[in-house]
Amino acid sequence: MKNFTIKTILAGVVLAAGSVASAQTLLNVSYDVAREFYKDYNAAFIANYKKTTGKDIKVDQAHGGSSAQARAVNDGLDADVVTFNTTTDVQFLADNNIVAKDWAKRLPNDASPTTSTMLFLVRNGNPKNIKDWDDLIRPDVKVVVVNPKTGGNGRYAYLAAWGYVREKGGTDAQAAEFVGKLFKNVPVLGKGGRDATSIFLQRNIGDVLITFESEVISVDREFGAGKVDAVYPSVSVTAENPVAVVERTVAKKGTADLAKAYLDWLYSPEAQEIAAKHALRPRNEAVLKKYSNQFKPLKQFTVAKYFGSLSEAQKVHFNDGGQFDKLYTVK
Image: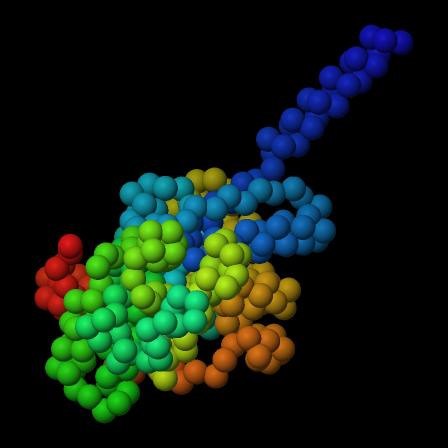
């Protein structure tokens, strides 16, 4: 009887091990500020996938500056999906035949299930009385921002500041002068969104942090409520959060269907709710309306309005020798 029991238990262990081994694992390579959203999204997706297919799966995450992550995937990191904060980082992979050339047409809203925008985080009580972009070029204000060459967070901050001048009727020359003054007030550049937040809060550098709207909730959760105030400027840029299947990896791993399901479900009402709770602006109009008190009205302009596209902005402003290199010397 004892031998039978032991054999039964051992057989059960082998079957369980086999089940775990056969479970497909998906790697989502993403940008810094999205880590908490995808942690919650992954749990919900895994549960829904199990419910609808009966299959067990696992989802791993890897986060960092969006552009740095794109380079890592290009250099061989086996991501099944990428979920970035700028289209140029996905397009970089498409140009190298790592994601599909038509990736932006494979999902709704140009494959961007959520959007965000840039705002300011200031220290509790807003001691420097920072209200709009003009305050960021004052001599008594120090600004923390992500390096535009390593993260989409920084590129959007730069483009938002440039577009602010244009929205007021200024020229590109005036915008360049303004952005140059702003970056002269930047004591150190963050490598990614979360690094910039750590510089601001843990190293206590700077008076204002320019970052995604979604970072506000993350700051409260990770560093404690009441440490910062959110300031919405008079105008900001619309930041799309593009996603794509990494064709090179899924062909090798046999995870194409799972990767597609993972990205498709980002558009589901449940996933859009999770996004809204993490201060990512949902594409679903009903969900957006439900959270209208959270997403304050803010005049926004598109990248296309002043820069043609993010790819064009990349060439003019952020490639080596571009406008950013002319305006800012790394300290």
